[in-house]
Length: 319
Image (cartoon, rainbow, N blue to C red):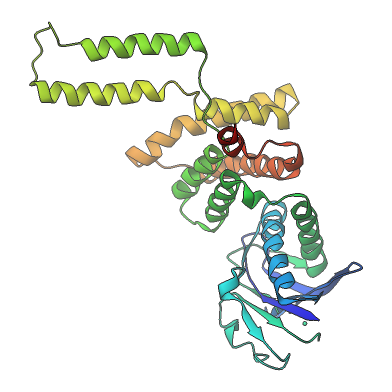
């Protein structure tokens, strides 16, 4: 019988302390969370038949921690990579938890025999262990269906959203949230007639200067034309903003509510360039408003995973 003990780091702007203990059980595994008011806390999972089974289970926790981030605004720092797991042949080995000096760690013990370290970056309330564990359990239910980490776009988007929570600079948070949204979209071509018009214009650009008297050398003109053509080729794909709005319309089915969401997205995408290239600032209200929308978008993606076509690129390459 094998057991895992996870020493985790919790980052939260919403909660100042985690306390109490909680347990969820099923016919196969026992999952316990102990939150010490002194910020010495532990997550344990026991009942594995082998070390490999325990390691595989840890990968499903990634999804659970994603859901905890979205549902309760708690970011989890966990050591879930196989090479970072500490293995012990006896439950007494490593029980001093020397790794609790501010770093995440995972221990696997061969014998059945339950800690999460929390670091808070703000907030003014206390969260009980039962709520945290219930949220993790919901995340594990999604992981049992399919892991969003299989979808590289969703995985990257979740990572950017996670970083935006930990970031104190509002401009950095703002650009991370926009990038997190864009990660969720596929490249989608414009209508055929639009592409035909662009191709016609690209041909005209290529031919420009053959007979005209231009104030550039041939090399300078070629460089300018190549740059211009590159921009025109990019226009063959629909704008990311348009694709994001298409999916958001599925989430916000109330016309008046979606109208407000649409205004926020248009304003945010329009402001992104000035933030990146001109150093313009954004308000906390603008960032939080965008964060709430991206949170809803990510939760929609995860909860609708079984109904989504996740592997477009792989499917197309297999045809």
